[in-house]
Image (cartoon, rainbow, N blue to C red; front, side, top):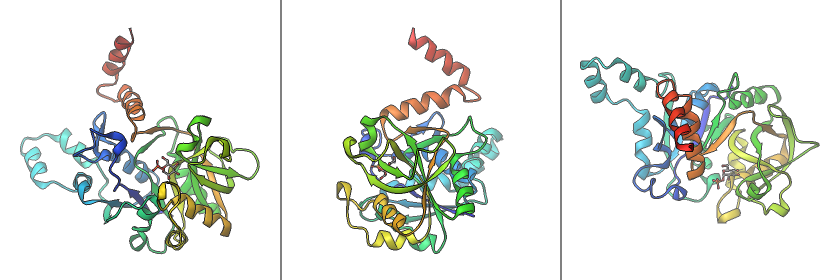
Length: 293
Ligand code: G1P
């Protein structure tokens, strides 16, 4: 079983300025919850029990969000605000632990994951990049749970991918596959992966979404990974080294992604989550219809 998930949250979120100047970009709300809460819920839905935040001193609000706040809880209890107390209790189940480690220097995603080495230990683990919301509300289970199950069966690392238009491949890690592209919900062994290739050099249109199941072997490979694209230590480059040693699968997702690190993706997520919100959904739809007139 995969019990631990690493969430790199140390980045400054320059794409989201000015909103992310004084608050972490992961704490910006989509409807009524911060983005990070959706991502943690996704991990929990896949059976994760320990969330390892790789974080930065400027981002303490994230740890505080998942911590208890007795003063606030006591006040809500005295005022018998049971719904609000429940909203606080729903932030994270009691049997899930949040652990944080610091990434003192911004040396890249690969370096951020390496910072979690001691906490993860000798176990396979998940990585979730919290900029991206993976919306599985139309599927019976989250895509990450399918990746966890596939790992349990095959022991092959799982890299979530989705098809993107050619003009966007240069923004992502892009995979090369054995044979034809898998159908949504299926896996296929990878033959390569390259970080942010030029469109003309991309091996496919299948982009790495930001959800991974990896073995602890990846840490040793990360320790030997030289700075790559953007002069950063890239997780993608360590995965490319891993697949020279053992099988690594691309898992083609079934859900929808929203890149909440970008203004467009954040806005699209806000609309999508608002219209199906139990309290404000109907009103949100009416407002959207009116704005479109
Ligand atoms: C990171 C990864 C990239 C992946 C992307 C998904 O890039 O390095 O392989 O496709 O996340 O969002 P970043 O967006 O941090 O530049």
